[in-house]
Length: 457
Image 1 (cartoon, rainbow, N blue to C red):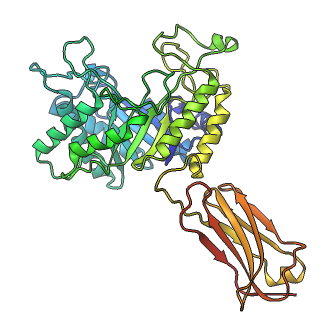
Image 2 (cartoon, rainbow, N blue to C red; image 1 turned 30 degrees about the vertical axis):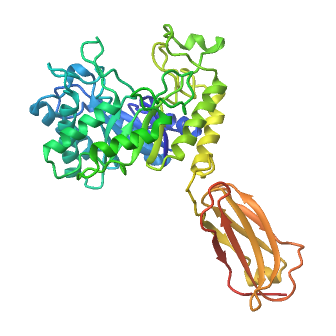
Image 3 (cartoon, rainbow, N blue to C red; image 1 turned 90 degrees about the vertical axis):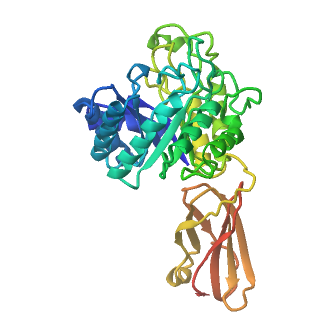
């Protein structure tokens, strides 16, 4: 899984600054990053300063081993690309970005096209869905443009907001993701297009408020949150199954999910404005728990290939997002440590036990004793587990296969293990040393490595 954050603060005018910011990002445990490029409505290529900042963050990401996702979208609904000419400009803008950032393999097209903040009109004069048709036209043109530059790039569509009203004339014209996906599929089917429009779908499964636990389902509404995965899959299937575009098997990335925490008295000088009453921020302990729960849910959802927290660092304006694990001044919140541990356990496969999931753990950097070391009395076995592991070291007779010694232990993913057999009775003659690994939470097929026959002195 891609485990990261959506964070534009890492974009910088020079590479050293981007690298310094990337260090804080990596210290929080994130290994994937989503940044944005916002099309202003008239340009066929990004401005030089924007392109430079994106190159710097891409360079810093490469140096830090961070996978970079680029989200490209109109800056707001006033520049919605509804005409063929505007879509061509947007496609040219995308093409330049992809050519100038060849290391970026994941491009998200659009941002919350189901709400009027980013896409207008949402409805036609007769009340039918206008946004789905115009967004599909942009997504299809963008898909073709990106693939023409790099056929191996992954194009993510959607980036949908989790809720909407589905009624015109309310003063805030929006579509729910359920309706928008249904309409997007209908337009795609009617178009007769023989190619897909996306390789995966991006989604923003925000809870109703920061005070709502991530697993909360929404059975009586069209909202889709982290606890409504089955409904998301069902609607993707209804929209696209049976067409050239994958539906219920489509990879999903949650490219935005945030939980805001309250600001303690000693940090208020770093913030301005007033927190909206609807936000309902939580304390930092609860923020850490909710982020951990989000990781547990996403980890066990088969189609989900990534989750990005929004943000790593708080925005200083209180009407905006204070959902980071760092305060606005760059110092860590207490939730950082819980989040960092949860990210590590997710990468190691141990954040949750998932029905039907079996993880095979392999050993790397394996080193059994040599014949010379045995003659000198050295009896150490070294290895590293690719995931968290339960390990068993066995010493067996090379010809008889009789077990002479069995030693068990627990290993953390990526942390070297030293199994010392010094002082233990192994008998004499020819023996083999072996390591067997299984995952402690989601066990798959046990994996074994063994030595060549060696003679004990």
